[in-house]
Image 1 (cartoon, rainbow, N blue to C red):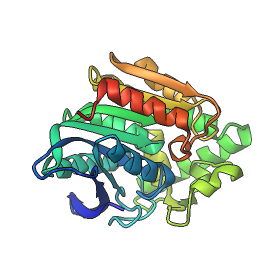
Image 2: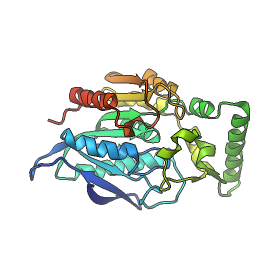
Image 3: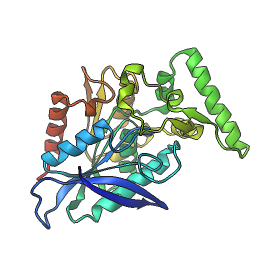
Image 4: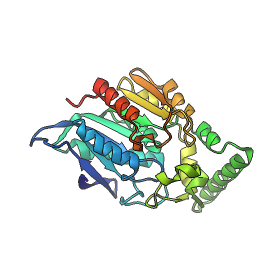
Length: 289
């Protein structure tokens, strides 16, 4: 299950779980992985549980945590702001470098979906992150939202929601609220991956801030540190073009993998091809010993 932990991000207390390999000796330090969930999710999602179970078997210590306003962390619900989640990730690094089990010079950020772009953009501004794995992220937010709301009617509805929110904020009012699927639609067959602990009611400020944020403008700053970008070829939540955009703007030591037979939630599907791919990449760029 891991060790229940908390740490501060500004004035907010965030919750997490710390995991370590069996047989780790007192005083022994290992490379560490910080695991981040996606849009309005939580640390106990399928991908986060898989990562935190698998990584210690390979010799790593790791920590999964809830971003502010998610899971059991403090903060307003349904307000997902990229800059604030980057601050949370940096606070997680602050926590990890003080753990006696952690080799503070070897910290990898691993994020899925929204967490993928947060992992990249945190590494872009924090040199303590020495490697990144980003699964299911995107580079150009305008393209990302256009592909999500791909019919003229859907785009008109999304655009009207965003512009109404901008107008209300400019007038000093609170932004309206919206259902998560009005911001990031998820096809019915995939909704089982989003449980009742996830956030479903969001401030439209979330859509505005995410639309105005462009991860591909930051990804080049990760280099020359290793960056693994992974995407499902048939992803209908974040299209593969998202990771291709990231890779096209990335620097040296970046690798892109597009995989068939998996979906947006591939890190929670226990697919042996995914497991072996990640294990091999870690062995080459971020070995446990």
